[in-house]
Length: 144
Image (cartoon, rainbow, N blue to C red; front, side):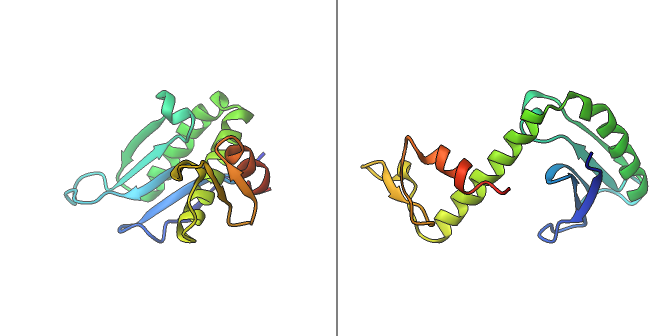
């Protein structure tokens, strides 16, 4: 079973750590911006798509990074039993879709939904249409 790992978010304006369970980002622990020095300095959020979209998530604040990590881990132990393999798979599919869409945009390629004829060419060279787009992304561009 995967363990929780943290990776620093290099794009965040303040100190922020993404928390992963295997390859799935299941939350964040970050320094809170604009709070008085005597207030809790760290905030955390535990939850991921799709479960977080069903109201299942936990969040809190703590004075120190270590306390925020401990609180996050406790929340994760309660959260994880509600997760199914299908939830993790839905996350991976959404991530693959987002990566694919952004790559198409960066390369100046139109999605089939953006052109009147409903057909376009993927950056990998495959001709796709509205009906085959989702299947193409999940079978060809989803990370193993």
